[in-house]
Length: 484
Ligand SMILES: Cc1cc2nc3c(=O)[nH]c(=O)nc-3n(C[C@H](O)[C@H](O)[C@H](O)COP(=O)(O)OP(=O)(O)OC[C@H]3O[C@@H](n4cnc5c(N)ncnc54)[C@H](O)[C@@H]3O)c2cc1C
Image (cartoon, rainbow, N blue to C red; front, side):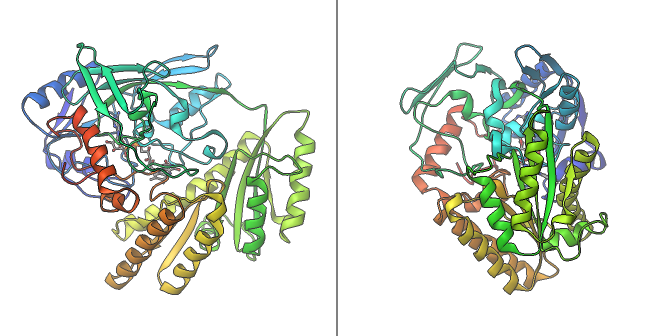
């Protein structure tokens, strides 16, 4: 194990992709997963607080400590096994998503949970129940987690396979490797009925108890091994960026694809770029039509028999909804598809680069609402953005009614307005039965807003779950909640 104690060495571990700054007394880099148990046991017996971090691409400060020890999983990066026949994999937590995608491609397999940031790790993705473009068809990370090994805050361990341990009504108990039993009550919590959600613990009566760890943001234990379900690669994929000179048409096109439709077009992803996003990207992509007010990236899985038919159906649909059909980018080869994927990935990266350049903490929305409220949410968002006089870009997972409005604040006045907008959007999302965080989680930055979504009793219920796992409140003590 490597231990970093010098200020310069620790520096990169004290900040995440949102430029959230923290402080670690020491940074531990275990080199085997069993070292985690050893480290954690020692920290527990000495009452030393600790936090887990992986690639620190997180955007809410969850992987950045306020004090104590930071345990980084960066050296635990082995793909232990890929079982092609059973379409599953076993991994250490520090495997980067891109490394995993590349490896799976060689076996004609895929892991559809694909957050835009492919430098993120599988452990970080499970801890945040990360989602991505393909979540539209396949759901978030949770849907693919079939096995976890979790080191508890006292160094003991839980090994749990999906389908093995369920809560009985609202009562849950889990046995540890040392034959201890962890018991907790599942509070009744109102959660959004149809949106993705990464705010708070996943708690449901009769739930599969593996799900308590998925999305728990590193607050219940250190995930040391992960089993994932996989899928076969699709035989053919059609990927297209469709440009629009009218927002209403863009929204109608999206709605058509989001719902069952007469052409039976069933996309695996629907992603949104607004005009300001296209302007930002045009620095690197000269082929964006100037007339364009927005764009949709859409992707379909198909096969060699249906390829021509589906391509034609998409073409006919674009003819109906946009006057900029001749500018549509269509990719059918892996290489062209990668170009389109890069186009989407370049966007949050460009935003974050600008923020880093001006040393600004990211102010952005991660809200989502149900499909039947999306127009209200969308119109309200732009009406506020356009009246504020603060620079912004909006992009994201429009298929899931989940957009990121990113604000560029230049001075204190801008900051005030941006924060007002940010609060307004979270409250609006909750009013519309949506969520304050659809994918990035609460971490430290969004702790004050958990109460927009949950009552005091619901938050106390979550804190009691945390206490059942971490009686000394040593692990990630400043993530998710304030006092416990
Ligand atoms: C440009 C950009 C684009 C992004 N796009 C998306 C997107 O499309 N979808 C999305 O969901 N997110 C996205 N994110 C956010 C981020 O990539 C995800 O939250 C990701 O899951 C974080 O993974 P990480 O390895 O960087 O974890 P970190 O940031 O290091 O940690 C994140 C959280 O996970 C916990 N954690 C990490 N490893 C473990 C472990 N082994 N055991 C227990 N807890 C652990 C940490 O304590 C922390 O709370 C994006 C970020 C950036 C910068």
